[in-house]
Amino acid sequence: MAIDMAGAPAGTMTTVGTDPAPSTPASGPRRARRARSRGAPYILIAPAIGLLIVMLGYPLVRLVVMSLQEFGLRQQFGAPAPWVGLENYGRLLTDDYFWDVLWRTIIFAMVNVGLTMGLGLLIALLLRALGRGMRLLVSIGLMLAWAMPALTTTVVWQWLFDTQYGLVNWLLTTLGVGEYRGHSWLSEPISFFMVATIIVVWMGIPFVAFTIYAGLTQVPKDLEEAAAIDGAGPWQRFRDVVFPMLKPILLILTALSVLWDFRVFTQIYVLQRAGGINRETNLLGVYAYRISIGENRFDVGAAVAVVMVVITLLLTVVYLRQMARQEDLA
Image (cartoon, one colour):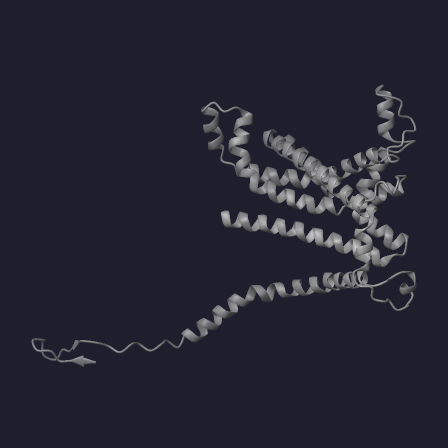
């Protein structure tokens, strides 16, 4: 609305108020583009999620269903599987041997995680201190150890500890440590798990060392130099400057290592087949396999597998919470 005001030059109009401008025609297409951009990530990950549901969802559902049925050798050949509810779980949880295997698995995982994290941290610090050439050689060695399949690594270490032709027995005997000709490292639980621990830690160190080394490269050198000027020694600089910055990485690596070492199967199974004792060295994964395949008790084996899945999910929740906490701090 415009009004001709007194005192204004002739032929001019002074604007007192204007009506609101109508919305531009482009606002509609802009909203559509925004909606498409919001939905694009979900569209892109939809095929991967669908594949995971098909590849993992069906076996998991089938596993749970089997654990609630009586499923033995006859059911493998088409006999109907009667429902027994939680009877398999009750039978499992009242079995003393199951609890022995569970605690053995937890202790084995904790020992391996501790050794993997400790040695991985030391090697990462070594990589940081080495020159470019030596760092490259050590990195190549770590990469080769990391790239070797679990089965191949286990067979190599099995031959190193072989009773008749093993290099370890020959070397210990030659050095005068003791008489180790014909010594069997796999016939006793302690020495069996020592060999298994060497293999698991050997395979886990490269990932931990590389990840921690990547974190060390992000620690500002100015802070360490300032601490050194203030009189802090190497241990004090590591404890008060480096370690607090590495703590988020170490927490995530620890959670991942627990997940991996809790589900160890190949190393234990291959060593058992190479001459190890079974009952005293079973871990949860091997135990579930032997009950299902060896004894044709697929229902109880499925119950053991479900227990493993539940424990793994709980550990995964801890890992995801650590990830979310680090993102919040960032």
